[in-house]
Image (cartoon, rainbow, N blue to C red; front, side):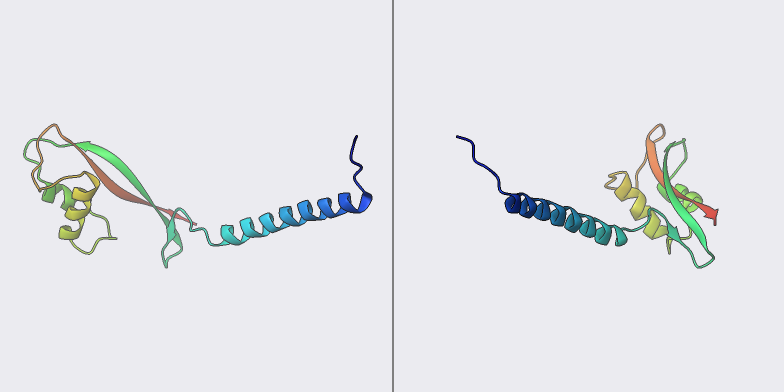
Length: 112
């Protein structure tokens, strides 16, 4: 024996589904408004993008020398950037060897 669905029951079900959809849309829009951009803007109005690249250590290279050559303005000191390089590359000490690959970060500014 089939159960008949009354018209009121169908309307209530439709309202619940419609309300749920509207609620989900409001939640998505609300959380979307708090998302952070993938780049930061400076006071000059340009966007700064952070990129990563791998370099091969050459004979005579030191971690400190590479840090001095590749450090960007966002770091206050070479000491700070050396620590960032060590963290990015899982290094326990400042010792690096020729032929080893090292990941460095660099910025690229784009004017808007």
